[in-house]
Amino acid sequence: MAKYGKKAQDKVEKAMHEEKRGQLKSGRSGKTVTSRKQAIAIGLSEARKAGGKVPKKAGAKKKAAKKKAAPKKRAAPRKKAAKKKAARKK
Image (cartoon, rainbow, N blue to C red):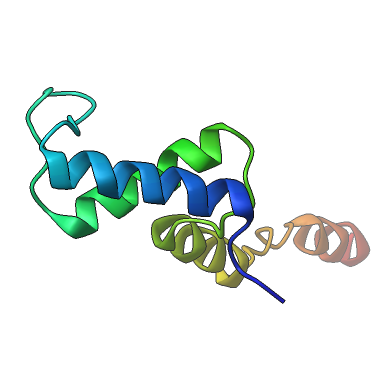
């Protein structure tokens, strides 16, 4: 089964062409993108926003795995037993 859908392929292809021509800009700073990897990342990000079939980001996978593996905390033991013993001695 394919990891990426058609929409994701189209968005990445468009971003790569813009990067080659020097027209692809970074989102926040507005600087021209020169890295192939950054161009692919921008294309995938746009595909996610458009609702395309794209796997989750690596950071999101790590967070989900960490959350799942977190040990469950046990409740502190109650001190009712001590009160019962004191009542029995009387």
